[in-house]
Length: 223
Ligand code: GRF
Image (tube, rainbow, N blue to C red; front, top):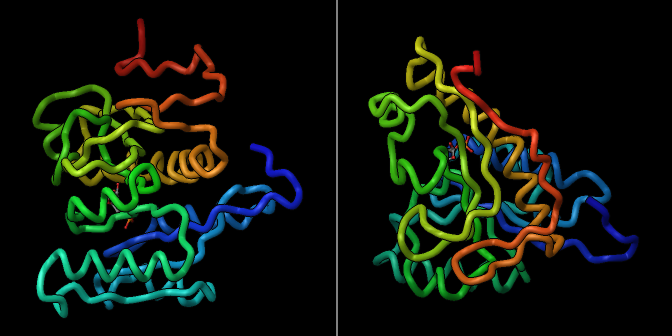
């Protein structure tokens, strides 16, 4: 990816609820001088989120917004939106943010709000994806970065990565393999969005980068 000298980086807020390993991968990628986005803020709805501590230690602006202190979802989302607007945030990346967002929040951040989900959407929306993938007997699983729409785990797909499901896998084994792929595609997908290379067209994303046609995963491998 190229970042023209003097081109301002897009200001990104990362929303987390827990350990924040995807946040970490975004923060680390954004340190590259030519990365098209900067992490301007990390927000957690859980004050005790491990990721928040890490972000603070990096010297990043952080904010704990304990959702239990708000009357309802609408009040929380309204406050969150105004905090983001005051900080001149241009893009919002959900990284293990374990809260459903209201329709008005999603509308306010339309095409500026992205999420990572640990399955190959549209398969296995929701929680407990890895055990459900194992129970279904799929041979390939993976992860998806997508624009957020009101319906959970639905929205134009920006990037996906596939990993094999091995016969001996526990849900934890599969989660670890998928997570390693998440850490690669989230920084890549955010860069595509921030640089204007991933543009929403109807229900889909039109990406300009050339795709290597040979990058195919067979699982089990072809004989
Ligand atoms: C990741 O698996 C992500 O795909 C899902 O929640 C998990 C968050 O993990 N949305 P982390 O907090 O980024 O480590």
